Image 1 (cartoon, rainbow, N blue to C red):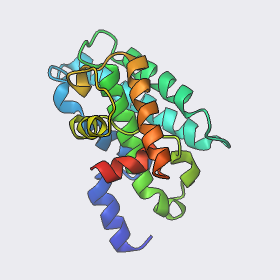
Image 2: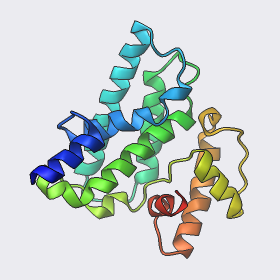
Image 3: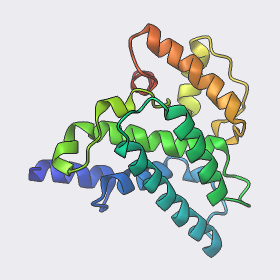
Amino acid sequence: MNERNKFLMFVYLGEEEDEVKGAVKRAYRDFQRVMGGIGSAENKRMKAAAQEYLTARLRVYFAQKSFGAFDEWHRETADGLKKCFCGFPRFTYGCAQKWINMAFKYLYCLADFSPQLGFQMPLEAFSRCHLPIDRRTARCAKENGIEISFSAWSRLDDYDEYMRLQSAVREIGKAEGRSALDLDFQWW
């Protein structure tokens, strides 16, 4: 990897040399504002454990030979993150999906660099990924005829409702010849 690309990686992921861990840390910043009160020592331990958990889960995901069971992997990972934050009521499935899905989005942007990074992220690994739900993508979903039943993505705590939305997004993407994650780039 040349020096320009190393600089780009530094700007993108910070000082973290491990791209998966860097993507997890960067994705945490995308939802941390809704985690008011997370600053206590105990909560910091929960956050660190959750970051390690998500990093390990992503490594397991990318080590697979087949990527067809993404929805099951996602549900298990979201449940695991919620367990990491047990007792912290502000950590909902909305927060879990945002963290997981944004980590995938950041890694997807790096997929072309994966051979230079020494970490294989085949494009097929991203084909079933979910669209990260936030205020903007929820608005775009509504504009595309998808019913939104929650007031804010951070308060979404019904995984079945979350999957109903993801299924509808996949149908829109399929009609356009795009994955849900590719549709996210279009909607943003």
